Length: 209
Length: 209
Length: 209
Image (tube, rainbow over all chains, first blue to last red; front, side, top):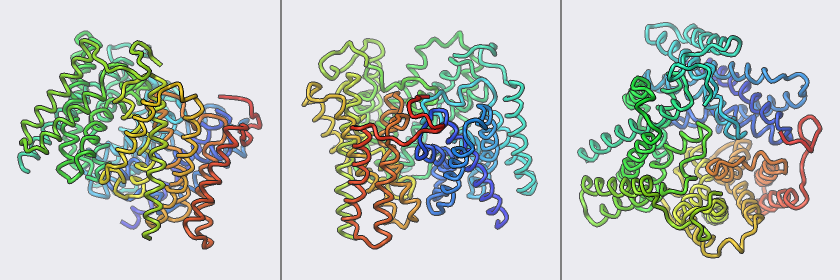
């Protein structure tokens, strides 16, 4: 349980940092000021985990431990300082993929550790993984990442399900978590690089509503 | 209290199923894949009740009992299998009306059963009834159902108020709930079929902002 | 603590009333009916404080005390009765500024009084102050106030930080709260009247993404 807590914390910090950076990058695209950078970084960074904690009735993780916020603000400052030349559009996509994969595991892990049933723990992983990006996109008044045709929910689901099912059959938390993370990231990477997708409703795969 | 719990559960399942189907239909209009179908169905189906539970401080209803999620996924699968030919645009509107009417009652019922004052219980019914659709529309990046000129909030309010007031004057839960449900559904049906509306601000009824 | 509770309640009512009025004004611009007026007023009025209470794990303030809702509905009725001629576009902006400044202080005050660490209390002030307007704008399917180039997050941050830091160095709650409120309102007023802004990312201040 102690090592579980350590892993949970490490994954939380990692996901918070990369989602925070994507929030700052979304602010960068609109040429916002440094304070709005920090705001977008904070809301995006902690948004997914906040939803998870509210849904499972746990104290919201960053409220009592504001170092999470400092991590977000540091990510925002890093984006600001490194500047726009270094960031092509694709880096937001890849950071988002990393954060999504981490949260798919950490969302399911924390939910499971608090006694949430396996199916709900998987869903919690999916919700946590996808809502960071959704909140960022809604705040930025952009179509959410959910609406793109490439795989996004599917990698999160596969990662969370891999982690939970491996745990159910007795795999220790660390390798199960790594397997879930790799599964989510691999599917998402395929979606980004080679436009992997599942058949759309009605059989068309080319339409966009 | 036992029969109350049964009624609450039945209404919850019903509202979850029809809202879940509307979420899947929203995904269908954009030709999403089966996983995104399930995601939209789940978020839309449980969204209203989740908001209610978070606001009244109750454990979120589906977290400990994932059969609600299975209901949503079944609704999504049904929409997927039956296919687009069977679903004209209007069916989403009617399923949404059913879910709205059910949640107007069940939102007020659960809030009231946990000691929330009558006025807040009515508001909880309205919020629960309308936020399932709002969350779906925000996720789908569409103007929310609240912005249409036809009655939508009003039927939810009338249904929740009917239920709560009948309960205050001593009507048993079951007939009061049926009356509230019928009230909400009737007003919403009138809005859908005959464009019932209240006068808009400034006296114009034809304008759209 | 007693006077703290009184101040908290007074500020809560004030912020709820002015944010409620901005919600009703948003509904007015779309010529909605009186019920939708009330709905927008209620959601906008209590939205920021609701988020605060959910995040810090406190009972949501208006659920047990529905007079807050009555305040919102009164604000909505006032907007309806006074009518559109009296309201130029700018009044929504100014009421929003008042509500933002009040919530920056009251959000930090309530969080701090429940033992939240200072950094989180400041963030809570910022989130509470800005999310009333964000929820209103998202519901109205408009670009949120966060996306404008003028200062909005910055005044909320300055107000909340002023209040919390003054409290840390021993200033009594009342003058610290007034100082925070005035700080937030002054910066926001400068942003509204003279387009005060911080430099945007990349050095450009004229671009809009």
